[in-house]
Length: 104
Image 1 (cartoon, rainbow, N blue to C red):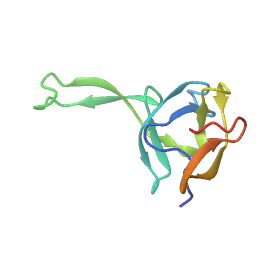
Image 2 (cartoon, one colour):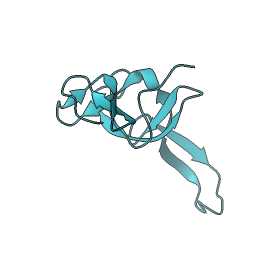
Image 3 (cartoon, rainbow, N blue to C red):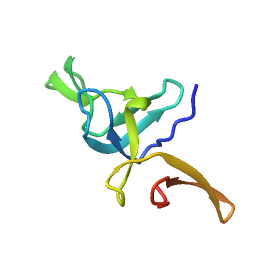
């Protein structure tokens, strides 16, 4: 199990796969499986039976988990995917952009 550089709520850009170049917000992260679910990325169709939640049933589109190695944190200042550095500031460890030093 490797350390993940992305967390829930981070803005990321996809660097590999069918959605390469797209960006979105991380909805959930699973460090155990090394996967992340990104808003609007990796869409799959699911055939569902009618239920209380979805009385009509049918085909719904939802985000599927993608491997964390296929995404990179997005820096709004640099306008691209960046590597992450860890800096201790006021006794707290924060993640910063390696290029510009802005907190992610």
